[in-house]
Image (cartoon, rainbow, N blue to C red; front, side):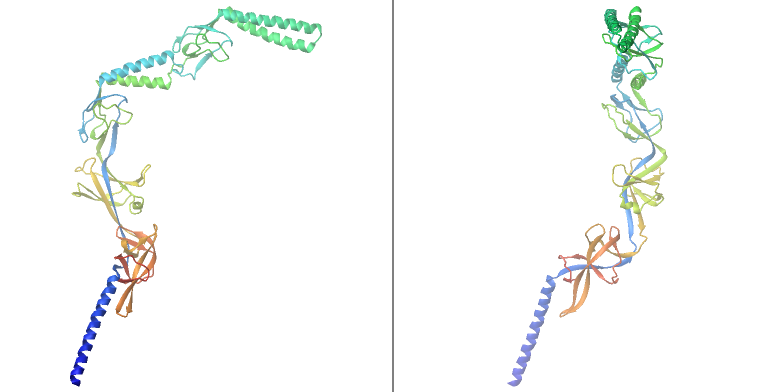
Length: 464
């Protein structure tokens, strides 16, 4: 009986151990299942490779813009973008009826300016014509733009008004003489002298106005030239000039400009509205279509491909650390089917009013054409070597600082355990895959967390 009892006891004990083992395993599985599962990577000491990729367009080195007088209607566009043309080929035809209407309007406008505008002529060399103030103009015998000779009558004054004015002056003189005589009787020498001065001044004024009356109230030109300004009929004179006569018949800029435009329109009308190219090349851009009205901007652009192309691509300011004038880059076109290696960067140009820069790469290739879309690529190895980790390992707090978690191993009750430790880092370099960190003093075998199934905290247990 004792033997049977011992065997049974041993059996139950073994079963108990088995159950405990199973429970321990299940407990460990449940404990591990609640842990964050992380993926890790090693810290690498290396120089980072920086790759710059940028899309751009192939443009001609030399472009010639074709301009037309503005405000004219397009009757026909004679070329298409990409067409090869020669010097003298017709590229546009303008509506001649519309041109002739503009010619008539401009001709009328210039005639009006020459007939009536005071600033039509350049007055910088004009000779002024003066007369006495306070006289009424009864007739103006010339107009702005008229040629006149020296001594020619310009203006007639109202003689009736002038005669009355002279009578008033004479009465003032007579009154002042009587006043002076009264001062003589009282032997008031001071007032006698003052009245003598006043009478003398009034006598001189009377003589000036009398001379105008004696001449019939006419005002003549003192020189030959063109009348550039004149007083209006019915106006009353003042101390300023009543007329300006210039021997410099140069028109003001506005009228000269109108005359030049009129000459261009007449030449265009004689040529039946045809616009011809002054250069040979390829039509690279057309800004007008039939029915449009021309403006001051270019109607189209002709590219001279004989001098080659410029590939122009946009890059960021950060990219300028890795691309500069004189560097060698690769270009690809036609969805990568056409590749051009060992191209030299000519220059980097700051974009006006925009962020970033344009990279310009000269290119000579007869298999390519204007407007081809291409891609620039180049790779540059950093000059400095640093500790690098994958991008996903670091959570950035700003442009240069962040934190990451490293994995630490320890012995626990159930074997090896892993926990994470939060480490502050400073980024000194980066590319599309890695971040270069300032020296942390970590072992190269240190593992960093690159992904986690749960949010991590410092000293948290994890499962790799």
